[in-house]
Length: 264
Picture (tube, rainbow, N blue to C red):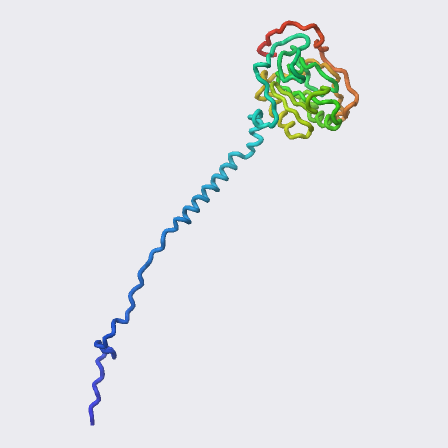
């Protein structure tokens, strides 16, 4: 009986080493590093800087519109006309003054200021200019204008110790606001610049020559508009009361200018 071939050795392979085939192991893949995302990083940095700038600007400039009007009204209230300070002399004089224009924004004036109030008739500009020197704002209007505009102005000026209001027939604008060395012409009482001008220039505005001086308790030269019993301002043409205080010396003979004292 023929002999069977001996079994292959244990641990051996049924594939001969001389088969000519290479190793069956695959080579490990080569690791390829990802490029650093410079574009994403730079874009994020730029966007963050822009956002920080916007937030910082908004925080620093919150309310800057209001602040700039109050601190620098000459450059932030549209239409304000500024007089040359050299032309605004401040001598005390008796009698009338030949102002280049009425209402005048300053100049020589009567020693007695005009009491701040709402008037239904023209007042002596010599007294009103002295009030401007003390920080008053003088609101004048053409009486030929609409009555509702006059009533709205009176509601604004009534009771304020640094506001004057009176009519001037034929003035250049329906409404003029005048402070020392400053004037603003508007056509409507609800123009936002009316409040801006008053808030910026009345009392101790930056243009005021004599800050802290009063605009009350001196002289009046025209009929004062009477308040209703409940304190409301009566409409145009309502009854008026005679002025209180010393009579106006505006019609007295002119006298030589007297230098203005340090306080008046």
